[in-house]
Length: 166
Image 1 (cartoon, rainbow, N blue to C red):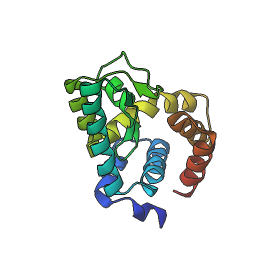
Image 2: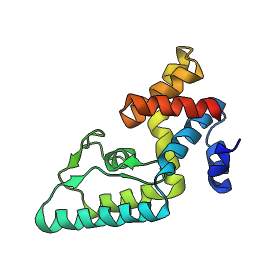
Image 3: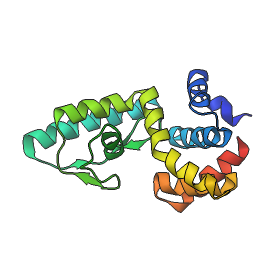
Image 4: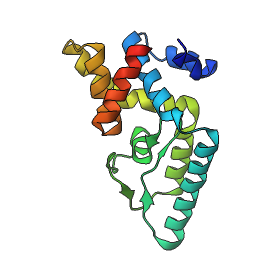
């Protein structure tokens, strides 16, 4: 497949080893392809700089922090913090009142490739297996997960189409 060649070999190997379920692997590949289509390394570095600047502005002036999406899977800051045990955050919040230096370190840790992949799987796996128990076809599985992951029905349709091609 031509589309799979857009996933670097090392990342492809890590994704394929994350689960034994081929459907879940195909959905994760689809999310990776969508989230990396417009965001090259340069743009991701800009996001990281923006994140640190937001943190500094928050500490100095008390300005709220935007719940940015970061990393290869474009995970929200609150999703990363929730994964690392900080339960006081609403995953779908647009703004965060404040984060500590320790939480910033967790976010930066969550940006790393393997950690970002693990958090992505952690985020979608429960819904994946819940829908799988209902005997959902791969098309509805990927569509529902895509909409849940991004919050937009159009994302679900795009993921559905990509997973079909993978």
